[in-house]
Length: 359
Image 1 (cartoon, one colour):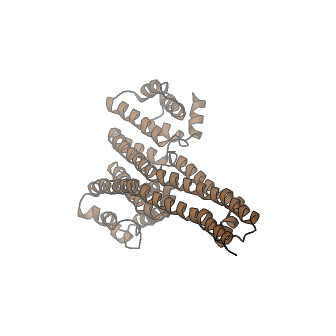
Image 2 (spheres, one colour):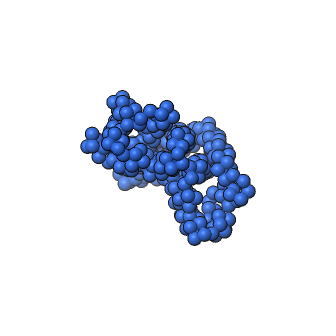
Image 3 (cartoon, helix red, strand yellow):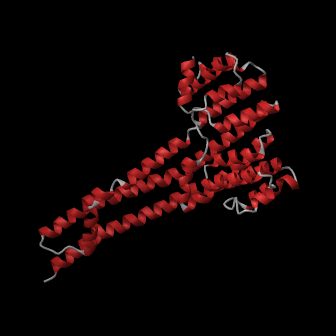
C-alpha cells in the first residue's frame, strides 16, 4: 500500500477528482466515521489516480498519521492550498466547515473552467474551419487558375499572383494554427490538474480582448471566496492573502499579495500596506474591502458577498460570448470566404475572359 502512496505522490489528481475526494472526506467527517476505514472502503470503488491517492491516505491514517500528515505526504498529488485549509480546519476544531467551504470553492473553480471552455470552443472550431479553407484555396485552387492562365498564354492577375505566392510559402506558415491549437489543448489539460489548483494555465485567454474581463471576474470571485474561507478558518491574514492570490494564477495579483503580506508582517495596517499602489489590477470594490473590511465590518462577510457577484457577472459575460461569438465568427468566416472566392475565382475568371475577348 505504501507503494501506492508513492505513486499517488507523483501523479497529480484532477480538479474533478479532488472534488470527489473532498466530498467523501467531508461526508465521513460529518458522519463521525473513522476516515481510514471509510476511505479504505471507498478506494476500491474509484478508478485511476484517485484510487491510489485515496488508498494511500487510508493506509497512512491506519498507521496513526493524522489527515493533515497524510495529505502532506501526498503533496505531489494534493495541492498545497487544499492541505492548508484542511490544516486550518483541524486547528479550529471544525474540519467539517472547512471541508464544506473547500467544496464550494472547488465547484466554483470547476464551473469557471467549464464556462471559459464553452465560451472558447465554438470560436476555435470556426477559426479552424476558416484556416483550412484558406489553406486549401491558397495551395490547391490558386495554382490551378495560374496553370489555366499559362496554358492560354495570358498574363495572370495581381490578386491571383498574391494568393499563389502565399500558397508557395505555405510550407513555412501552415503549422502555425495547429501549433496554437496544441498549446491551447495542453494548457487546458494542465488547468484540469489540481497539483497547484490555480488558473494560470488558462490565463492566456486574457490576451483576447473579449475574454480578459471574463477571466478577471472569475479570478476575483475565486480570490474573494478563498480568502474568506482561509480567514474563517483562522489562517493568518498575510498567509491567507498570499495563498488566495496564488490560486488565481495572476502574476500581478500574486506579486501584489506578497507585497501586502510583507507589509502586514512588518506591522503595517492593511490600509497603509495597500496604499503602496498594490492590487491596482483588481476591481475598486475588492480593493476597498481589503483595505477597510477589518475596520468597517466583517471582512469575511464582505468577501462572501463579493464572490457571488463576481461569479454571476462572469457567468453573464460567458453566456453573452456563447451567444454573440458564433454569429461574429460566422460573419468573419463568411467575409473571408467571399474575399477568397473573389481573389481566386471571380477576379481571375473575369480577367481571363477579358483577355480572351481582347485583341
